[in-house]
Figure (cartoon, rainbow, N blue to C red):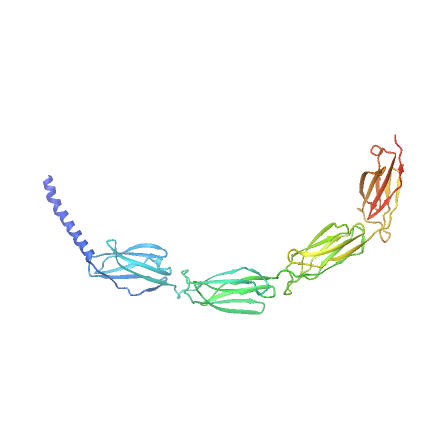
Length: 411
């Protein structure tokens, strides 16, 4: 049985060894020639490399290196001709492609070719503009960057013409730029006037959308302030309006609405007061409550880190020269008033009245209340004020009156 199998299999083994040896000999001895002479191709179009060989059966592999990656292509020997078709995905991307023809894993021919953008397709424009807000003045600018590509997103070749256009007020400027390293760009400088600037680009009849850059006023310059009021008396009730001049930048542009102005007030006793206001049409209007006593306010306004005004002085006259008071109910009730203003009218409700209570020159207590209909009342309850005598100081609207020593009954 074994002898019979040996007799059948031996001729088959020898036949296959002979065929493999012939094939190996043919592949090793076969010479290949590149028939494709073209070195530049257009993106989006089919690309094939043609080779010829003297052998009718020899085959080879084509190893290509592309920006998308590396791959090995195979082809059949068709009567001594081999055609390698580059994958469609690789045909869409521009750049250099290097190839190696391999036989039996050995490099026998090498070469390269390039793929350039397809100018027959519609041009696509990618644009970037920034910053979108700049200050007035020729030292500030925004940059427009344009990247023209073909329909396959391949950047156009260098020296492609791009038109960069900008419009401000009645002026339209068109600048011709050439692409370099895929891009065309321009620094578009600001103007001395504030407003909106429009920018666009164009390449091969393809136009971009409209881009906007806002030219805003430069930092404010120094300004002046003044004040308005109904009267000059320190009634603690009326309002003094503080108003700036029209605040502008160095080019005469109104500063932006909402710019915060601080009004800083220094009183006679060096107390510091502040009020704030935001600009509208370049003007800020602050409000300041009248003091409740004679005083002189020194007012200065500023925009932090930018501009300031010269100080002004506002004087307030005393509302009253003196005021009456009476003791009732065995000196246990003190009534201050009536408090009358500069036209002999009753002062507004809410005027602060202060009572200081002394016993043998020692301050025992300070009581504070507010006026109502021109009067203020203080009650000294016996359980809390047990001494036989007290003296008082009454202060309101900046005026202080001292009383005589008052006697009190004690249990």
